[in-house]
Image (cartoon, rainbow, N blue to C red; front, side, top):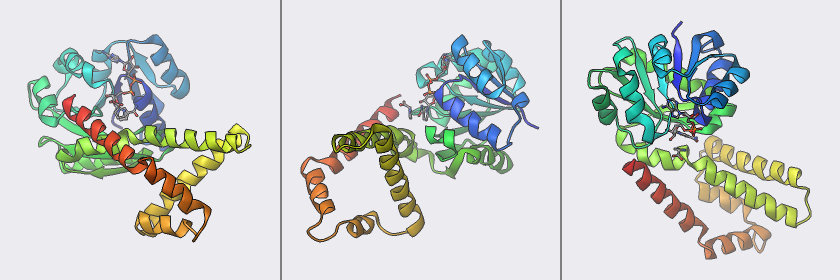
Length: 265
Ligand SMILES: NC(=O)C1=CN([C@@H]2O[C@H](COP(=O)(O)OP(=O)(O)OC[C@H]3O[C@@H](n4cnc5c(N)ncnc54)[C@H](O)[C@@H]3O)[C@@H](O)[C@H]2O)C=CC1
Ligand SMILES: O=C(O)[C@@H]1CCC=N1
C-alpha cells in the first residue's frame, strides 16, 4: 500500500483525509500529516488516528503520495524545505489556487511528478468536486491511482490546466456562496416564524434537491426554474425581486473576481 502524506493538516486536508479513510483507500496507519500547529496536528490525530509530525521533511520522506495542503503563499517555502527528500518515487498533489504545474516544477528544480487539483470542502461528506491535471512525468497509471484517491471523497474530473482558475470559482470557492445563500434563506424563514434549526434543514434540503435535479434530469436550469413558477404564483414574484436586486449579476461578478484572484496567486 502507498503511504499518503499531507503537508498542512487544515480544513481541506482534513476533508480529504475523511473521504480517503472512510472509503478504505488508505488505512490510518498509512497516512502522515505535518503541521507546525499543535492544535492542527492534534485535531487530525484525534479524529482519524493518523501519524503526525511537526517536520515536513519527515512526512515527505515517508510518503509516496504527498499532498501540499498549505496556503498558496507558503508553497515556495514548503517546497524549498522538502525538495531534497523528494525522489522519482513521489507523486506530488497540489491543491492551491494559482500555482501552475510549471511553477511548482520550477520550485522543485528537478523532474518531479505533479498532479494539480482543485478540491472543495464537501469532500468532508463524500460530495466533493475535484478538478485534476498532471505534468508530463506522471504516467497514465499514476493518474488513475490519483483519480481513485480523489474520487473517494466525491467526483474527480480531468480538465485542461487553463480551466483551473474558473474551477476555483465554480467549485473550489462556491460552497461559501451557497452557505451564504442557505443562511439568508434560513434567516427569512426565521422571520416567517420557523425555528432556526428547522430553517437550516429546509433551506439546505431544498438546495441539495435542486442540485440533484440539475445533475439527474439533464434539463436546463431555466426549465427547472420555470417548473417552480406557477402563473400568478409566489415564486415568479420572488424571482422578479431577485432579478431587480441583481442576484444573477452579483453571482457572476463575485465569481469573476474569484477567478482573477486565483490567477494572481
Ligand atoms: N478550504 C477550502 O475550501 C479549499 C482550500 N483549498 C486550498 O487548500 C490549501 C489549504 O487551505 P485550508 O485547508 O483552507 O487552510 P487552513 O488554514 O485550514 O490549513 C492550512 C494548514 O497549513 C498549516 N501550515 C502553515 N504553514 C505550514 C508549513 N510551513 N508547513 C506545514 N503546514 C503549514 C497551518 O498550520 C494549517 O493547519 C490552500 O492552498 C487552499 O487554497 C483548495 C480548495 C478548497
Ligand atoms: O479561499 C481560498 O483561497 C481557497 C481556494 C478555494 C477555496 N478556498
